[in-house]
Image (cartoon, rainbow, N blue to C red; front, side):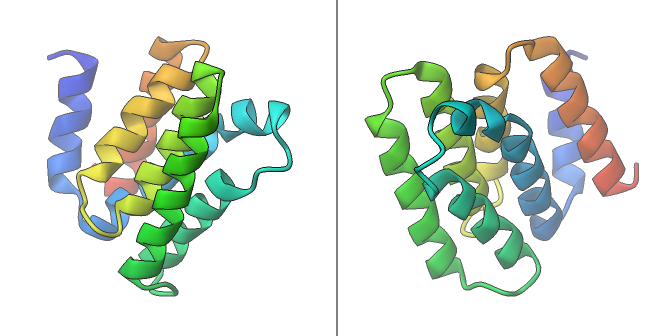
Length: 134
């Protein structure tokens, strides 16, 4: 079983709220890459707040989706691919409120943004394992 399969197996066992928290954590883990170069654009961070707020019942799905769309727009505006990947990870974290599987996209974009993809994958697996209690 490769690393992606291991994450997939754990992901199947988690509920929607746990998936949103994990997506938030994956995207947050690489957000510094975006914010180090662009401190004035708050759309990715706002999308992460939306993901977390939805997971804790403090935001509607519709409002979380709006935050996701704003982060996607931010990603399209980026010239630097890693910054775009970070913004997309944040957008997918917020979009997890609408569809659980967006969390997997948040994870994938965070992996693309990371400097060390293997270390990031290991971190994501460990985080998901902790959140699912498995």
